[in-house]
Length: 398
Image 1: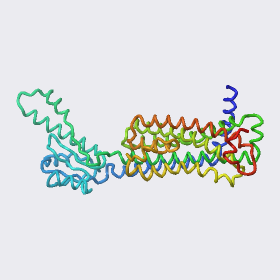
Image 2: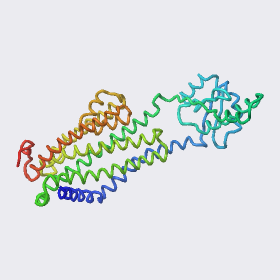
Image 3: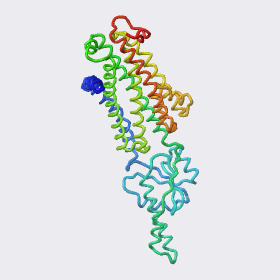
């Protein structure tokens, strides 16, 4: 057993080192990193346009008119705050929704309220909190018999109430973006690494290298080593891009989703990459062993690749408009479709806690069956050259 594992690892190590040292691997990884970093960089640039120094229009209702003067007096330099009066709260909220106002100040001088749609307006909120605390303190101090320490303690508890007019699921857009990115990366990497397997098998078969390899190791060891080595190559690239992207969005604060939730989603995406790769790599290794020429390769791997295209199309066309789609839910449990659809449903927050473990279990069962079937086809077809080997012939014992 130890000797078998060692042999598999030697084959895997050869595949891994050969591929990670190629120029295509390095340049491809750098390009994908730039693509992933483009989003947080763009969001950071957009966010800087709302930084101190940019113009912010602030509406003030009649009930909060006493706050206007303290706000003007306490406004820091270069904030670009523009205060204006509005008739009432209803009209102010309408102007916020239309984009005419960035934020509405309403409530009373001791209980102010901010109403907004975008951003968090932390500077304005802190200033109003200070003003409200001072007003509360002044009013309390005017009352006879009050202990100053108690008055200050009460004033420090004053907070600014905020009402966000954004949709009931303000993070849904970010979840949708994560779902799209996860689906695209999974689809792209599964196709790319799967084709590496297929091309490597046909190349070794056509130049007779496989005959020399099989004189010293078994076909099962060779196939397992190739799958493991190329799988590790894809995992290194995939994990690098995922971790760098997570660090970037964390450092630039471009996502309002909790960092733990984003990291959890990344972990699930990595799990589904491994499960999907195991399934598709085995299928593609078996399919490619049926032919001896690169020209014939596409005809045998296309049916396998199509099983990846279908869930990807369902994911980008159905789930964004209807995250709770019955079709998407059912297909996310189907082995082969799960690696793309289940991570999307997890990112969108519509998958129940038990669904992902169940889909993992089903995928593992399917992978075990595919490994047995694919291993048999590969073993019986890898040494047959010339015309394309039929599947039923490859399933027969040598």
